[in-house]
Length: 212
Image (cartoon, rainbow, N blue to C red):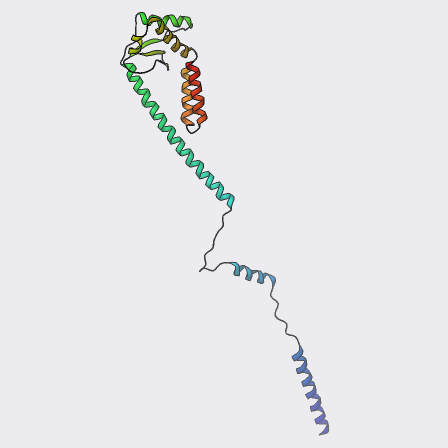
């Protein structure tokens, strides 16, 4: 009986020691792999379906897009204005052609002035002289065909022979210098760059130099 009580006492002491050791043992949490933590962080950073995601565009891309739209708009307006200028020029060209077709070329004494001035300028062909019943300035009409000097009839009747020779010589000098081609080129440039004042100033200076 004494031995049995001693063994029970030893078993109780062992049981008490085991419970103390179990109570003092630290609790270690389960280890989570690093890739699982990264996946959790990524999921938390993704907005939910109920929220609204805002995409911020870089400022450089926005500025380039704005400049591109402005350039396209300016180019479109510029071409439209140029088209209007060309249509008006074609309308005036047709009006002058109709005016020239309705009047025959001049012959006689005043036409001899043209031949005289043509020989002085060493022209191979003599321009025609045409009088029109219109209030316009003297001009040289030169294109694909033969050149033509166009004078208002009222002005030609009011001039004496010397002044008429000077007017004819002035118009022939335009043909010799090919001013009609220079004026056509200046018109084409100003019709394209109508928004540039330098083009108009250059055309004005060219016209003044040709009429001097």
